[in-house]
Image (cartoon, rainbow, N blue to C red):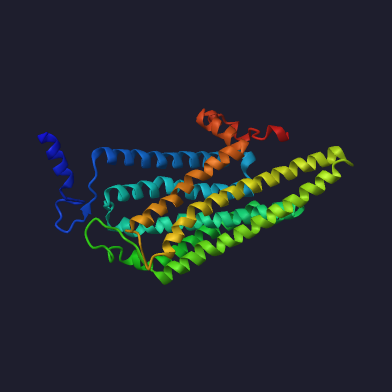
Length: 341
């Protein structure tokens, strides 16, 4: 009975992030079992995000058949999601569990900068993916001339470059003085006023999302019309139109798959921005904001799962990667679409 009493007293004693520093912040007091469960959960989520996105990155980079403009955009999106799983998730989980910042002042200034870059780049990639699918479905005959690898690489560069510039503008004060809003040692907080938050909401969320939704509404409207026309004409020239129909269905399936990616992105992001709308001052120390931020981070793990369900090539390439068959010098030329051969 005495041992139990001592344990309960220990959990109620205030603990500090840096016990040797008199200016240290208070550390969150949890039981060992609670801490262990939280670390296991967040570690598993982070590991899963890294592993799945690494499969996408290796697949598209290794297999020659996957070197297409659309897959190049998916690769860029996977890189952003990979960084979220490798850097953002582990650090955010430690900060959320311990309520302490153990990574120093320099990384305190850089970490929000990294988060803003990968988040903005993800959204930029999704916008370009929407444009790519819109051209593929609405103007298929001129798609190859309009959408080239060089143009796609420029769009990816533009997306990342604009994300970096935007992050510098938005976080300039924090980059110069990262501890200005810290009340004690062991705290890393970014504070934005309502006007900045609304600007961010419009620039990085509402405008791109409205554009994506508009594009996908037009894509699916066009897809319906095209399928009806192909079905009506198929009875006259069966073989020719059956091939055309297979090609069209492939394009429509790709548009549908990437439409699901965009939809899940919106579902994961909307709670975060609803939370921002209810706050007069936006601070990363807010528990509610941190919880909704995790919805955005989890989205980085969902995207590869969507590819696994909808793309047969992802399953095939993942099997070759896991089984180390890609070590074969000729594996990069493997046909991942045997049904189209």
